[in-house]
Image: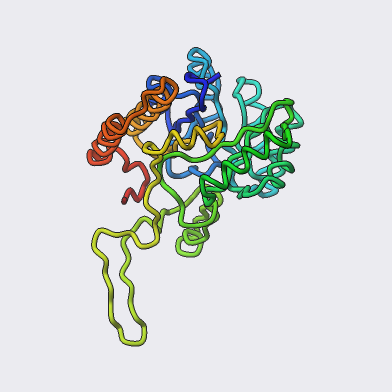
Length: 313
């Protein structure tokens, strides 16, 4: 059960300080990576297998759900490791695993661990939701969908009574705040081509968040755009239409930022917590939204968002 009963607020945790910031500021759930095989394997400190029990303990004390991210491409030599990770997570009472590879999904189901389908799978329609409902209770939709498309899917889930393995209706999760990838559902190969460092294995070099100069190869004419990042989308913020997201039937709101500082996590979680609670209390106003937006601008201006190792934008 979420704090407000409206929508679950999921916070990022790249280390114990960020985890505590999320817990102290009202997160309903946290997601995190352990060592390798998650999409922020090199952009945050990540936890170790030995940390799982402490993560579980801290979160269970506050009745906060815990989600292990195991959502990269998996190769044969990874299979032993994913089984070890999942076995340890299950033993530590971690709530669920966020997965995209069928090997991870299958083994999690085999040991009776709850599965959430990662955005990396790129779910964009109700028929795909129905397919993955055979394996998962929560599905993260593609980040490229419009809110009206999301709402149509949640309505069809109710209409067609699409249930997950638990027997409950499948819950839809979307990203609500933070960095967006320039590639469809994060499947980018730019970092791989330029640095032999695969984004799809959690090793993105964040090339798109650098400044570039465009050169006309015929004339040699150069275009440099000041203070713009041509290949990087503007960071996502849904605070000023959060009521519409709640109305769309989305059950989980995910905040991006496992590579970001604890101060950033604290501020973003607190603002979204207050906004969700205001919607529940029917006093979500323009004045309050402006205040929360100002708090977010302050933490951005202070540089606490520079968690990625390239850090721009």
